[in-house]
Length: 266
Image 1: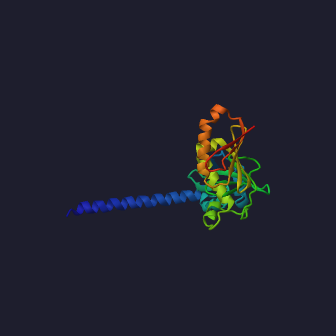
Image 2: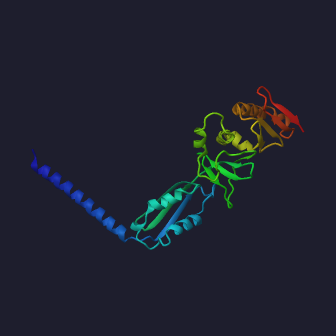
Image 3: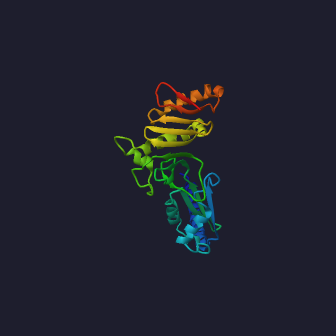
């Protein structure tokens, strides 16, 4: 047994561990001395969505912590700041951390709206891809599918609710808002229909109309039963018949009937 080699190995690990302990102690001591020199806020997708702005984040932070700049970064509770930022309905993710330069970094990811609902009482709100209700903004309008008309929600729209989770727990008859949400998700995830359909108007659960971006016609969908098959027929009609007949020939395209498309001329 080579005792010298063993002793040398033990000594080497002792020196490494001692170095790490000294380094950690030095970094901890330095962090206690470093003061917050500024706040850096980064909001992703801010060009596409502007539900929350840097100025609003700063005001929210100042409401809870009036003078962060100038205090030791070791005294800043980053976890607490993350929690009240994540409580904002339009915020999907928030991360708060400091660096050795004393900068307090705040990274925020906004929720992405999928559809805008305007109910029978003219109350409006967005729903994101996870089913979270988002309030409207007076400073920003997201260009998404609009669903409006005779819609009554069986829940409080002011509550911080995820509608998809609520819908999944329902048994028996599916509420209309859940059907509309499923339909909106289908439209929003299909590139062709996302580009084609701009609005869904609900006169009643059995009379739902679609407003296309191209053409002077409306599309009578009827109810939402078998909507995928109805849209499949409509797409075939769009791709084969309308290019020859013209997009402005009809005032209504009726998809209510299962085996046919009924068109009403202007």
